[in-house]
Image (cartoon, rainbow, N blue to C red; front, side, top):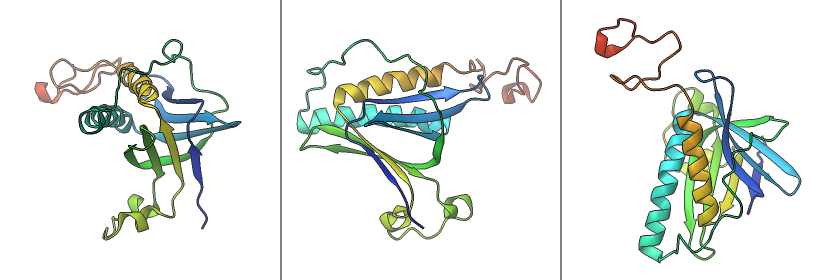
Length: 187
């Protein structure tokens, strides 16, 4: 079966966003450029971890390679626009990969589709590249400034959901939730 690599090096726009009401949201990564628009679905925790790990990657690039993180500024203001339409999910993300390319001083983000073996039982992973080589993927190359802009938006998107319970940290529904700190009583 053939696979697609959707490469944007660099994209005109790369953002994390959601569709739906808090508690029922679907999270997306969306890249636009060269007349193409690609949207891939992922979990909220993946968006949160992606932002966290990108921050760590930028700090490590600064520490190890002396990359100037403050030299470049993002043109205009923060991207608070909704996701572009039409919103057609190309695939659901199973694996996220990050890399810092020292030669071009850019961050490479790769979102790899969920494989059939992930949905079933995990196989022995002797060689990760062989396991993921036949899957669709979205590859985006960003400058450090564009990466920072992505991180800030991703944090806003994740934080805009349901407020956490002050006792257990789980998200509160409008009706409350079964709080483990209250022995299962509704809070």
